[in-house]
Length: 185
Image (cartoon, rainbow, N blue to C red; front, side):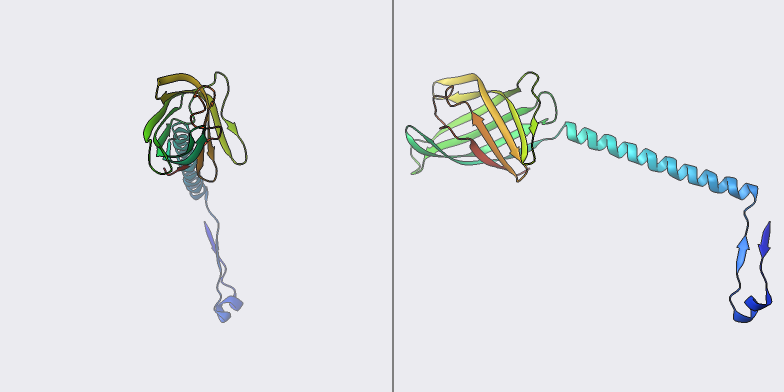
């Protein structure tokens, strides 16, 4: 059913207005289209949320090591790479391989840090500046592998990483300051 307003004033000014009322069938069609659109938006929202949640649980980071460390033998330059996979899981994996040499390039040797395990019930500590993962790792030393070394890994919001290995368990080889680097991926 439609109703058309054809008053004389509207015809003279050229501003005819038309108003239509929707019948029962038109209303049902409009309602069905609206409901279908709403359902489609909800489905897209849910699948996006699931994808984001999956991405957060399998987050991976990688980067470079570029650090100056001081120990009893002098000042050392460290350079290498690191990978931190499955960060948001209960068992993230961390591996770093880097060279260590005196500032003049002498006494170059390599180290690895791997087999990182989060401490029992501790979850990463999140602050306004970044996230710290606390656990133990295996560190390669001249004498061989040292297991269960208390290690904390901090990913800063500004794109830095710091890796603190227990100085006592590593014979103070890396000094008493964290190994520093950058997040690149």
